[in-house]
Length: 114
Length: 114
DNA sequence: ACAAGGTACCTTGCGTCGCAAGGGATAGGC
DNA sequence: GCCTATCCCTTGCGACGCAAGGTACCTTGT
Image 1 (spheres, rainbow over the protein chains, first blue to last red):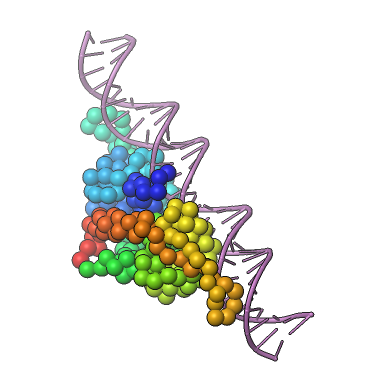
Image 2 (image 1 turned 135 degrees about the vertical axis):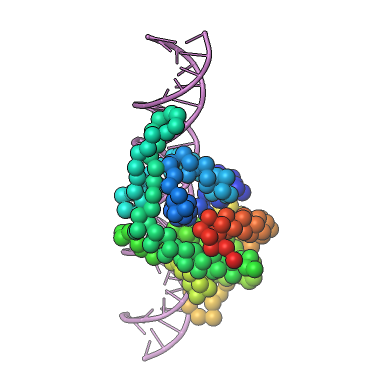
Protein backbone atom coordinates (compact mmCIF):
# COMPACT_ATOMS: atom_id res chain seq x y z
CA UNK A 1 0.00 0.00 0.00
CA UNK A 2 1.31 3.42 -0.94
CA UNK A 3 2.08 6.06 1.62
CA UNK A 4 -0.75 8.28 0.38
CA UNK A 5 -3.76 6.12 -0.36
CA UNK A 6 -7.13 7.79 -0.07
CA UNK A 7 -9.05 4.53 -0.07
CA UNK A 8 -7.03 3.05 2.77
CA UNK A 9 -7.20 6.31 4.67
CA UNK A 10 -10.97 6.53 4.63
CA UNK A 11 -11.19 2.80 5.22
CA UNK A 12 -9.42 3.32 8.52
CA UNK A 13 -11.73 6.19 9.37
CA UNK A 14 -14.80 4.11 8.67
CA UNK A 15 -13.81 1.63 11.34
CA UNK A 16 -16.30 1.81 14.14
CA UNK A 17 -18.61 4.26 12.42
CA UNK A 18 -20.12 2.19 9.61
CA UNK A 19 -21.84 0.11 12.23
CA UNK A 20 -23.69 3.10 13.64
CA UNK A 21 -24.36 4.68 10.28
CA UNK A 22 -26.23 1.50 9.46
CA UNK A 23 -28.23 1.79 12.67
CA UNK A 24 -28.98 5.44 11.87
CA UNK A 25 -30.27 4.53 8.41
CA UNK A 26 -32.43 1.77 9.84
CA UNK A 27 -33.80 4.25 12.35
CA UNK A 28 -35.54 6.01 9.46
CA UNK A 29 -36.98 2.98 7.71
CA UNK A 30 -36.35 -0.71 7.20
CA UNK A 31 -33.84 -1.58 4.49
CA UNK A 32 -32.21 -4.67 3.02
CA UNK A 33 -28.50 -5.40 2.56
CA UNK A 34 -27.85 -4.18 -0.95
CA UNK A 35 -29.94 -1.11 -0.27
CA UNK A 36 -27.79 -0.24 2.75
CA UNK A 37 -24.62 -0.49 0.68
CA UNK A 38 -26.13 1.79 -1.95
CA UNK A 39 -27.39 4.39 0.50
CA UNK A 40 -24.06 4.57 2.30
CA UNK A 41 -22.23 4.97 -0.99
CA UNK A 42 -24.38 7.77 -2.32
CA UNK A 43 -24.95 9.11 1.19
CA UNK A 44 -21.36 10.39 1.05
CA UNK A 45 -17.93 9.13 1.92
CA UNK A 46 -19.16 5.92 3.50
CA UNK A 47 -18.69 3.82 0.39
CA UNK A 48 -18.47 0.16 1.33
CA UNK A 49 -19.08 -3.29 -0.12
CA UNK A 50 -21.19 -6.34 0.52
CA UNK A 51 -18.17 -8.12 1.94
CA UNK A 52 -18.26 -5.54 4.70
CA UNK A 53 -22.01 -5.22 5.05
CA UNK A 54 -23.12 -8.80 5.54
CA UNK A 55 -20.68 -9.74 8.28
CA UNK A 56 -21.56 -6.45 9.93
CA UNK A 57 -25.28 -7.18 9.75
CA UNK A 58 -24.64 -10.62 11.21
CA UNK A 59 -22.81 -9.09 14.15
CA UNK A 60 -25.57 -6.58 14.77
CA UNK A 61 -28.14 -9.32 14.66
CA UNK A 62 -26.09 -11.51 16.99
CA UNK A 63 -25.83 -8.58 19.41
CA UNK A 64 -29.57 -8.02 19.31
CA UNK A 65 -29.37 -4.54 17.85
CA UNK A 66 -31.35 -5.34 14.72
CA UNK A 67 -34.06 -7.79 13.71
CA UNK A 68 -34.85 -9.18 10.28
CA UNK A 69 -37.79 -10.35 8.24
CA UNK A 70 -37.78 -11.91 4.79
CA UNK A 71 -39.93 -10.17 2.21
CA UNK A 72 -40.86 -11.00 -1.34
CA UNK A 73 -39.38 -8.61 -3.87
CA UNK A 74 -41.41 -7.14 -6.78
CA UNK A 75 -38.87 -8.89 -8.97
CA UNK A 76 -35.85 -11.08 -8.26
CA UNK A 77 -34.94 -13.10 -5.19
CA UNK A 78 -36.44 -12.43 -1.74
CA UNK A 79 -34.89 -9.76 0.46
CA UNK A 80 -33.93 -9.77 4.08
CA UNK A 81 -35.12 -6.52 5.64
CA UNK A 82 -33.61 -5.14 8.82
CA UNK A 83 -35.17 -3.04 11.56
CA UNK A 84 -33.83 -1.53 14.77
CA UNK A 85 -34.53 -3.21 18.09
CA UNK A 86 -34.88 -1.17 21.29
CA UNK A 87 -31.31 -2.17 22.09
CA UNK A 88 -30.27 -0.86 18.71
CA UNK A 89 -31.96 2.46 19.31
CA UNK A 90 -30.28 2.78 22.68
CA UNK A 91 -26.89 1.95 21.17
CA UNK A 92 -27.42 4.54 18.45
CA UNK A 93 -28.39 7.21 20.93
CA UNK A 94 -25.38 6.41 23.07
CA UNK A 95 -23.06 6.53 20.09
CA UNK A 96 -24.29 9.93 18.99
CA UNK A 97 -22.98 11.52 22.16
CA UNK A 98 -19.75 9.51 21.97
CA UNK A 99 -19.28 10.63 18.40
CA UNK A 100 -19.77 14.31 19.20
CA UNK A 101 -17.18 14.11 21.98
CA UNK A 102 -14.72 12.29 19.77
CA UNK A 103 -15.28 14.64 16.84
CA UNK A 104 -14.71 17.69 19.01
CA UNK A 105 -11.48 16.23 20.36
CA UNK A 106 -10.13 15.52 16.90
CA UNK A 107 -11.23 18.92 15.65
CA UNK A 108 -9.40 20.61 18.47
CA UNK A 109 -6.20 18.65 17.88
CA UNK A 110 -6.29 19.10 14.11
CA UNK A 111 -7.48 22.70 14.30
CA UNK A 112 -10.49 21.92 12.11
CA UNK A 113 -13.14 23.20 14.49
CA UNK A 114 -15.77 25.73 13.38
CA UNK B 1 -16.46 -8.10 25.58
CA UNK B 2 -19.88 -6.70 26.40
CA UNK B 3 -22.22 -5.32 23.82
CA UNK B 4 -21.86 -1.79 25.19
CA UNK B 5 -18.22 -1.13 25.93
CA UNK B 6 -17.15 2.49 25.86
CA UNK B 7 -13.46 1.68 25.73
CA UNK B 8 -13.83 -0.62 22.73
CA UNK B 9 -16.12 1.86 21.05
CA UNK B 10 -13.70 4.74 21.20
CA UNK B 11 -10.83 2.40 20.40
CA UNK B 12 -12.52 1.66 17.11
CA UNK B 13 -13.04 5.36 16.49
CA UNK B 14 -9.40 6.12 17.12
CA UNK B 15 -8.35 3.88 14.28
CA UNK B 16 -6.85 5.99 11.55
CA UNK B 17 -7.03 9.24 13.49
CA UNK B 18 -4.39 8.79 16.19
CA UNK B 19 -1.79 8.78 13.49
CA UNK B 20 -2.73 12.25 12.30
CA UNK B 21 -3.31 13.61 15.77
CA UNK B 22 0.33 12.75 16.42
CA UNK B 23 1.36 14.59 13.28
CA UNK B 24 -0.74 17.58 14.33
CA UNK B 25 0.93 17.71 17.75
CA UNK B 26 4.37 17.46 16.17
CA UNK B 27 3.41 20.30 13.85
CA UNK B 28 3.42 22.61 16.87
CA UNK B 29 6.68 21.48 18.45
CA UNK B 30 8.96 18.47 18.73
CA UNK B 31 7.95 15.88 21.31
CA UNK B 32 9.13 12.50 22.55
CA UNK B 33 7.15 9.28 22.90
CA UNK B 34 5.90 9.44 26.47
CA UNK B 35 5.08 13.10 26.02
CA UNK B 36 2.89 12.29 23.02
CA UNK B 37 0.95 9.72 25.01
CA UNK B 38 0.42 12.21 27.82
CA UNK B 39 -0.68 15.06 25.57
CA UNK B 40 -3.15 12.85 23.71
CA UNK B 41 -4.60 11.60 26.98
CA UNK B 42 -5.12 15.00 28.54
CA UNK B 43 -5.83 16.54 25.12
CA UNK B 44 -9.20 14.77 25.28
CA UNK B 45 -10.68 11.49 24.29
CA UNK B 46 -7.56 10.27 22.51
CA UNK B 47 -6.23 8.33 25.48
CA UNK B 48 -3.77 5.71 24.30
CA UNK B 49 -0.79 3.71 25.54
CA UNK B 50 2.86 3.21 24.74
CA UNK B 51 2.02 -0.13 23.14
CA UNK B 52 0.12 1.86 20.57
CA UNK B 53 2.45 4.82 20.30
CA UNK B 54 5.81 3.21 19.60
CA UNK B 55 4.71 0.96 16.76
CA UNK B 56 2.87 3.96 15.34
CA UNK B 57 5.96 6.13 15.53
CA UNK B 58 7.96 3.40 13.84
CA UNK B 59 5.49 3.29 10.96
CA UNK B 60 5.54 7.05 10.56
CA UNK B 61 9.31 7.03 10.54
CA UNK B 62 9.38 4.18 8.03
CA UNK B 63 7.01 6.14 5.80
CA UNK B 64 9.18 9.22 6.00
CA UNK B 65 6.57 11.39 7.71
CA UNK B 66 8.61 12.09 10.82
CA UNK B 67 12.29 12.31 11.73
CA UNK B 68 13.97 11.75 15.07
CA UNK B 69 16.90 12.96 17.11
CA UNK B 70 18.14 11.69 20.45
CA UNK B 71 18.44 14.29 23.17
CA UNK B 72 19.80 14.16 26.69
CA UNK B 73 17.13 14.55 29.35
CA UNK B 74 17.59 16.82 32.39
CA UNK B 75 17.19 13.62 34.40
CA UNK B 76 16.66 10.01 33.45
CA UNK B 77 17.38 8.17 30.22
CA UNK B 78 17.81 9.97 26.88
CA UNK B 79 14.74 10.82 24.85
CA UNK B 80 13.96 10.33 21.21
CA UNK B 81 12.37 13.50 19.89
CA UNK B 82 10.25 13.54 16.77
CA UNK B 83 9.69 16.26 14.19
CA UNK B 84 7.56 16.52 11.07
CA UNK B 85 9.14 16.07 7.65
CA UNK B 86 7.80 17.92 4.60
CA UNK B 87 6.05 14.68 3.65
CA UNK B 88 4.51 14.61 7.10
CA UNK B 89 3.26 18.16 6.77
CA UNK B 90 1.73 17.35 3.39
CA UNK B 91 0.06 14.24 4.78
CA UNK B 92 -1.37 16.22 7.67
CA UNK B 93 -2.73 18.92 5.40
CA UNK B 94 -4.27 16.30 3.15
CA UNK B 95 -5.86 14.52 6.07
CA UNK B 96 -7.44 17.67 7.43
CA UNK B 97 -9.60 17.98 4.32
CA UNK B 98 -10.34 14.24 4.31
CA UNK B 99 -11.37 14.46 7.92
CA UNK B 100 -13.73 17.38 7.37
CA UNK B 101 -15.44 15.53 4.53
CA UNK B 102 -15.73 12.35 6.57
CA UNK B 103 -16.96 14.18 9.64
CA UNK B 104 -19.63 15.99 7.64
CA UNK B 105 -20.80 12.72 6.13
CA UNK B 106 -21.13 11.03 9.49
CA UNK B 107 -22.82 14.08 10.98
CA UNK B 108 -25.38 14.08 8.21
CA UNK B 109 -26.11 10.37 8.59
CA UNK B 110 -26.30 10.50 12.38
CA UNK B 111 -28.11 13.82 12.44
CA UNK B 112 -25.45 15.35 14.69
CA UNK B 113 -24.63 18.32 12.50
CA UNK B 114 -24.62 21.86 13.87
C1' DA C 1 -38.18 -25.20 -22.00
C1' DC C 2 -33.71 -23.81 -21.54
C1' DA C 3 -29.95 -20.51 -21.36
C1' DA C 4 -28.34 -16.11 -19.96
C1' DG C 5 -28.29 -12.29 -17.11
C1' DG C 6 -29.51 -9.74 -13.15
C1' DT C 7 -30.37 -9.44 -8.22
C1' DA C 8 -29.55 -10.59 -3.54
C1' DC C 9 -27.49 -13.19 0.08
C1' DC C 10 -23.36 -15.10 2.32
C1' DT C 11 -18.41 -16.96 3.25
C1' DT C 12 -13.23 -17.31 3.20
C1' DG C 13 -8.70 -15.47 3.72
C1' DC C 14 -5.94 -11.58 4.34
C1' DG C 15 -3.91 -7.30 6.16
C1' DT C 16 -3.92 -3.65 9.34
C1' DC C 17 -3.79 -1.61 13.74
C1' DG C 18 -4.81 -0.58 18.67
C1' DC C 19 -3.92 -2.69 22.90
C1' DA C 20 -2.38 -5.36 27.11
C1' DA C 21 1.49 -7.32 28.90
C1' DG C 22 6.17 -7.85 29.42
C1' DG C 23 11.07 -6.60 28.96
C1' DG C 24 15.30 -3.90 29.22
C1' DA C 25 18.22 0.15 29.69
C1' DT C 26 19.53 4.65 31.85
C1' DA C 27 19.76 8.02 35.67
C1' DG C 28 19.18 9.67 40.40
C1' DG C 29 18.15 9.02 45.62
C1' DC C 30 19.29 6.58 49.69
C1' DG D 1 24.86 -1.59 45.95
C1' DC D 2 19.73 -1.34 45.77
C1' DC D 3 15.30 0.72 44.61
C1' DT D 4 12.44 3.61 42.02
C1' DA D 5 11.29 6.47 38.14
C1' DT D 6 11.52 7.40 33.38
C1' DC D 7 11.74 6.13 28.72
C1' DC D 8 12.14 3.07 24.89
C1' DC D 9 10.63 -1.11 22.52
C1' DT D 10 8.56 -5.96 21.31
C1' DT D 11 5.26 -9.92 21.25
C1' DG D 12 0.82 -11.94 20.75
C1' DC D 13 -3.92 -11.26 20.29
C1' DG D 14 -8.44 -9.73 18.67
C1' DA D 15 -11.41 -7.04 15.83
C1' DC D 16 -12.95 -5.59 11.43
C1' DG D 17 -13.10 -3.78 6.60
C1' DC D 18 -12.30 -5.62 2.21
C1' DA D 19 -11.48 -8.30 -2.22
C1' DA D 20 -12.73 -12.31 -4.23
C1' DG D 21 -15.51 -16.07 -4.84
C1' DG D 22 -19.71 -18.79 -4.37
C1' DT D 23 -24.88 -20.02 -4.25
C1' DA D 24 -29.74 -19.39 -4.98
C1' DC D 25 -33.65 -17.10 -6.94
C1' DC D 26 -36.22 -14.69 -10.47
C1' DT D 27 -37.00 -12.76 -15.15
C1' DT D 28 -36.36 -12.42 -20.03
C1' DG D 29 -35.29 -13.85 -24.66
C1' DT D 30 -35.39 -17.25 -28.01
